[in-house]
Length: 100
Image 1 (cartoon, rainbow, N blue to C red):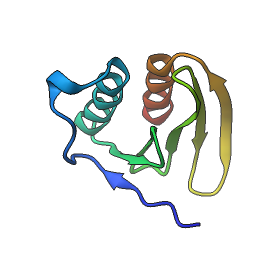
Image 2: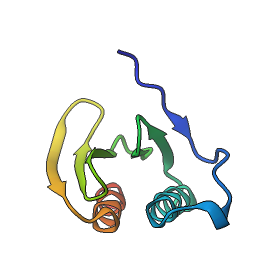
Image 3: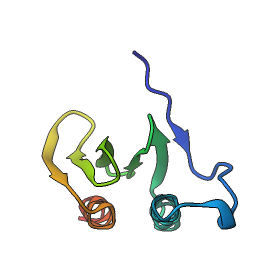
């Protein structure tokens, strides 16, 4: 199965129609993009960022509105993986992992 990445910026739902989670998703994409990372969406509710130094982070939606898997990696190796129940904390950890 080929996973298609949609790189930010791309069209999104209007602000007045967004859910709280969609607001968090968009803030993550905007923050990553503003820091110079390549931010993208893939699958349903999953996101990633790539840095020029070869680091990558993915936040994979694993169920409901409260379960995500954060994966930090390089082009060749997985560095760490953790299941998290707070998207904002996962997003902050993803960006932090790319800054190091």
